[in-house]
Length: 535
Image 1 (cartoon, rainbow, N blue to C red):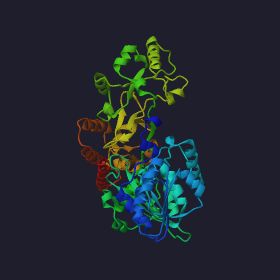
Image 2: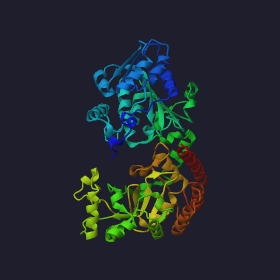
Image 3: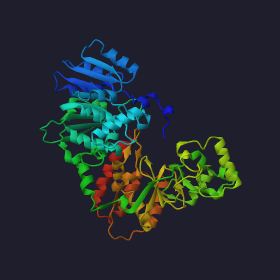
Image 4: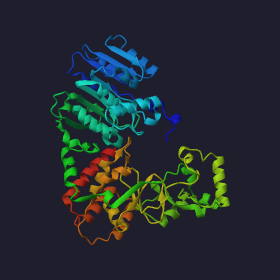
């Protein structure tokens, strides 16, 4: 749980302000069809969009809303001699409730990126009402930018234009799926502009520009296009010459794959299909690792085990990716980690009589305040960690250059840094892990996860159904030996691209996919990986 008191002012108010060239581009676009227009800026901040609007020579009226007094003053100074502007101090949610009969020709801005837990209770209720009134289900993951976008489209006139700066979460997170479908239904044309490089200087928030035109009563069809740029310096009118595509091409759970060219996307959706590949979930059940509530107390090193004689309460735990270099977690790894003093033991006090040493350790923990915490407070006994079980393999939740999937040879468990994997047929464990390092599988990881600023890729259990496993015909490959060779390659720091080419070559003669399919998958995977990790 994020502690509100420890968050920056920027995070609490969602105030990462837009570069002027981005504001100019959006303002030019939304104002293009209108000589006289009503314009709304729902989160004015320091007034950068107002500054851009002031340069438009037309008889418009602009209403801007901003919550913070100091920002209102900055915004008003930028347009203080221009009677076309009205800057209101207040909460946009309240403004929307009080004025939702008013419709606007154009709406432009950068909605605040405020997590649900940092909203006031009143704001949470108002945000939930906005979603419910538009046929959506609110939840505690929903960020403020989503409700801002929905409310703004609701009060946009037919054929009106909206231009927003939104996080790339729009394309990829599960809670925004409802919004993606809402956009397809409400907008007759939708343009999304993405950037390989960061737009906001000094922070790792990746963004997308949303340019939408609301449908009218007689709108016959809906269109969408995604334009991929290197950086915001490439923004100009000419980039909007890219043709639209039929909206049916975009009816998928995530839009991350639309970073690809049309040809690449067609290959992924058509060549890598269910006749030649299977789903991760066909072979494996994935669940999150253990949430101890306090790793510093429950995950300990050998010295602490010996000091309090806790050996009977411990089992190996994989807590960090650096604790194994290969894809087999072995006794040798545990021995090396013990020698390095790493915290590799999990304390399991569940239903056990406590020795003097265990009681002493728990008492010291309470004296140091180790028992205080939200999750610990929900337990009948704070020192009994729930859901301790041993998986057959692990998968790192946050991916760097490539997914890390580790076979469990030591009866260990893991923290929630990893997902815990159970195979429907344990006899296929080595084979499936080997296949997950093929280029079609790694390509699906790139396209089905969530990318964070800075390039980290997160895979959640719900994403696993879309991970591809190439299907093999009858074969005589010895996967028990192949997995040992794969482990050696990782431990000797061979490049991931060389490893993937080797895996593809090993299975190429036995897969339903053609060798050309593997080659194409490899090239697209490299493009996706480099795009993500190059941020």
